[in-house]
Image 1 (cartoon, rainbow, N blue to C red):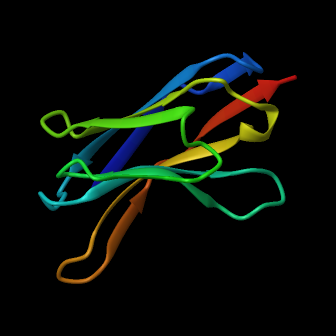
Image 2: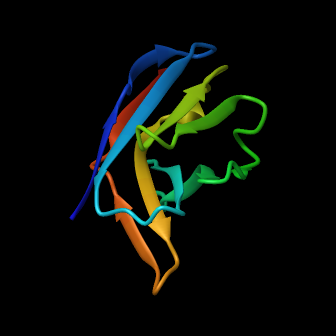
Amino acid sequence: QVQLVESGGGLVQAGGSLKLSCAASGSIFGINTMGWYRQAPGKERELVATMTTGGRKNYADSVKDRFTISRDNVKRTVYLQMNSLKPEDTAVYYCSVSWPVPSLHRYWGQGTQVTVSS
């Protein structure tokens, strides 16, 4: 059983910063991708940023140069530093861990609300 526990969401004014954390536990394949997705009301869930065990990062265009993903492989924790927040960043942010072998495995956290006021 895999568990992902997120923390760090909240309410912030536009231009402010927040840092999200997600700690993973359970049977997780050693080579994996951890990351963040978000879902705003009435919209589909979308990728924000991901990072592989080896350090490869991927960002959505909308957050490049504002958000930074990092991870601690020993602690099995992924972080998302969010700077210069905009009202359109308001969403529930979900942590994810996945690996492709022997078949695709993907697990989700419960989500944490991020609200950016204008």
